Amino acid sequence: MDFKKLTLEDKELFEKYISPYKFLSCEYSFTTLYIWREGCDVQYGIYKDALIIKKKDFNGDYHFMQPLGYKEEDLKDILKYLASCKKENNIKYIFKDLEEDFAYKIKCICKENEDIAIIEDIDNFDYLYESEKLINLSGKKLHGKKNHYNSFVKGYDYKVKDISGEEVIEGVINATKKWYLENNNEDKMLYYETEAIKDIVRNIEFLNLKGMAVYVDDEVVGFTLGEKLNDKLAVIHVEKGDINYKGIYSFINRTFIDKYFNDVEIINREQDLGIEGLRKAKLSYSPVKLEKKFIINCQKG
Picture 1 (cartoon, rainbow, N blue to C red):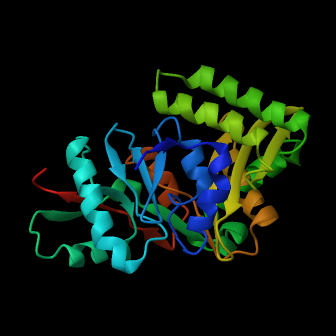
Picture 2 (picture 1 turned 45 degrees about the horizontal axis):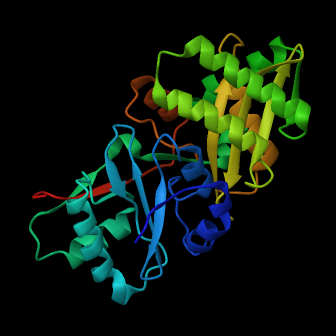
């Protein structure tokens, strides 16, 4: 099996394989994979008619994702093949980004192999929220968020625009470049994210994304991008704001969901990557669930 680098033209192929599943994880979204195609060296191949995705994590360690579109009778052979690929190519993990059901399916298949280990990947758990609560900001737990939202609404003469058309797209790109230069600490992943944002806003219609930009005094002070993964779930891929504008993030969060995703039950706001401040911020919105992700590894090679 030859692995190919992911490109924009692979969207139709990937969605054919992904669409039968109802993943709650953000990982199995073509847009997520496309955003990190360079930073995580996302590659793919077809084996026994199943889509096999290989990538590296933010630590530079390669792994396979859950095979998609496999036949049950082929799964053992696919596992055997990927285990041989792991060994031959010195890949650290056989699987990452797994949902719980698939992780334990593999554990049962490999029950005779005591070298198989299942590990909860806590830093990559996705935060899931009820969209209604994010829109209404009701209750004591979200009272502070409502205050921040009101501070922005009352404090600034703002405009909200769809990310479409050359003027808005270029405004978002310029803001992205500006914030990268102001915050760059030679973080490679921040660089890859910045480049990806510039790319996906230029291809926002092709990727079927929704985007919103917030203006104050004709300058972009915040923007966000997301998509529906299915009828019940939407994922927020990007959310950026200038913290000099008090309440900007609370405003972006509530307004975007109310404007574009008020017809879905659950909002996935992705993971915290083990970053303490990000974890605190995500927990402050009272998630209804943390969607677990698992690593499977062979303890001996």
